[in-house]
Image 1 (cartoon, rainbow, N blue to C red):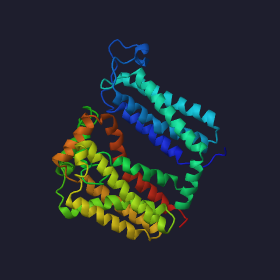
Image 2 (cartoon, rainbow, N blue to C red):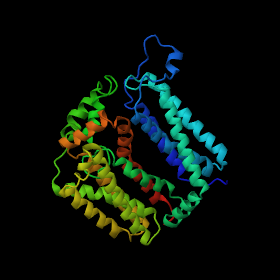
Image 3 (cartoon, rainbow, N blue to C red):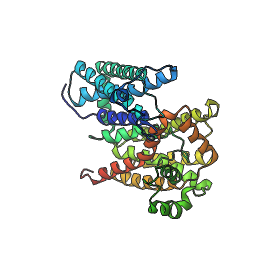
Image 4 (cartoon, one colour):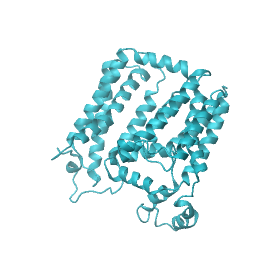
Length: 375
């Protein structure tokens, strides 16, 4: 097949980064076991016990990676199906083996040959799914559909839009409020090893004098909370408008962004507090902000692309600033604890970094979009 532009490359890279982070989380406590030997540190023992949940997590974690690798080899590199499938499984297996070996140096993590087998099985399943989609012609139809809905060479933007709901899965201080919260960042930095960060004189001044007064959050009234929620929906909607073709398609994309945001918030709440409380995020300010953001995004659907990109930058900047100083209530702390220490420990780090970095990646993308000569 001839090589072509494909969103599979950035998606495969994102999947690989998330796999690495989830496999090595919390990335602290690195140590060599007593009586270190090369053989013991590279071996991957068979586990004494395992659970069905662990198996599914390993399979589902590597399924997207295998699928995206296969599509990247087929569509971007122009390889045939057989070699592309073997290469995708081999790359995923090598990555999994490297992660299991590195877990020997992380006391909180337990390397396992069974995890390696489940990871390879997940990658293989992803390759099978991708090959079937390719054989049915759905990829070509999808590429044609993408070209009808979006301007050429916008796969980076569509990749960011697809990642937006992932960042919403982690509990946020405000509904749809992606970006780092100063209090959380300070807490993470304070946990740094002595002599690296916390032992530096400048660090003491930064935490005590500069960030200390706002690290615990600034009080948000209902109006400010609603405005922040509205920005959280308007920002990705403006990004979609900035790369989409004019007309009714933008209205559909805005509606899709609203549906994706609603679904991600509901799923995150259900995972933390149980299915019976899935809609608990719908407080008065959150509902008002969500409705206002949807209306504003629908009105913006008729803006020129460059104007939408510029307004998207403004919305993202304001969103990041407000989320940074947002207060942390007890329910937010309880949600984070469930993710960090409970059943979501393997997903916490990856989802958190997507949520923290997404606004900055979107701002960088929109800046590049505005710098282009094409209108």
